Image 1 (cartoon, rainbow over the protein chains, first blue to last red):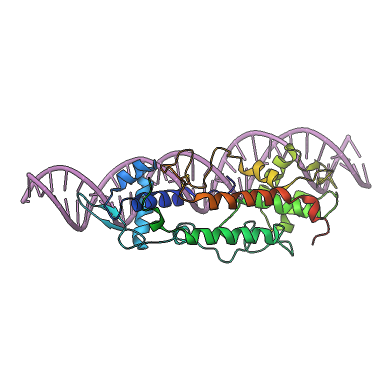
Image 2 (cartoon, chains in turn orange, cyan, red, yellow):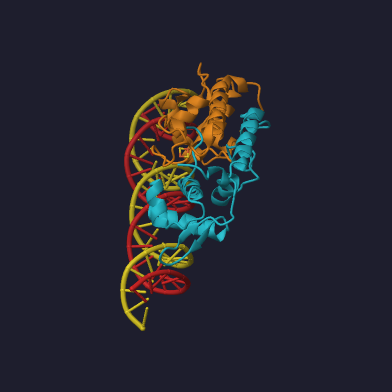
Length: 132
Length: 132
DNA sequence: TCTTTTATAGTATTATGGTACCATAATACC
DNA sequence: GGTATTATGGTACCATAATACTATAAAAGA
Ligand code: FES
Ligand code: FES
């Protein structure tokens, strides 16, 4: 694996995917965390952000939990939410300024980047309904 | 940019690329750092690792510095050196275990990953000689 | 009303990568 | 030999992400 996502994004996508298999049922953070083998505390924090962003819904109290209403968000949205956007950068190396006239990774890389973006945009939670 | 490399890898590739344009000339860490706009201390540490790994050569004292001898390493090698290998993982999400039977990112992702690997393997320092 | 279960919120701790600091060793030049 | 310049190495500091802890608010049910 060359491309590695952050722990937070991993938790978000795995957790959301699990919810997607549950068809709107309310699931506690505790159960989600156990199911996807994540740190419970961290998962709660991540899901709070998802709730605020409207990606997932929540209800407190007994038999409460997190659930997907009509939300059918794509993976790219989740990615940007947790990893930030950084539209400014046009190379995985370096920050805003590059010492070279032409990027040493070249256009081949830009194409891969674009492919990945399209892939993440095409994947949606609704694709995962019949999963196990 | 969805794919972002670590600061260390960025420094390594940018620095090596700069050296590659210098055709074997010895360049001090100080100059390299200034040229690629990196923290000097960090660059020294990174280049120490590269020297130990045989990717770059070095000489101490006045008019010493780092230089490329016959080394014509590919980018994938540098990547693995600094970021580690992690052959075990087969998904950018999660660690060794995934709660799902089939990866939620699917084969499309694996293909992108493979493309990136091939790209990094194909890029070599010698490609950069006539650069600016 | 009381108790339990859940999310929410704020803060504290830990781990890690990046950076800085300092002493030492090698080499060149005078 | 002395001095300046460079890499080397160890360690210490800092910022950030990940994780833990503690308290609170909401909802359900008895
Ligand atoms: S922008 Fe510097 S290498 Fe791509
Ligand atoms: S292995 Fe878990 S989502 Fe790919």
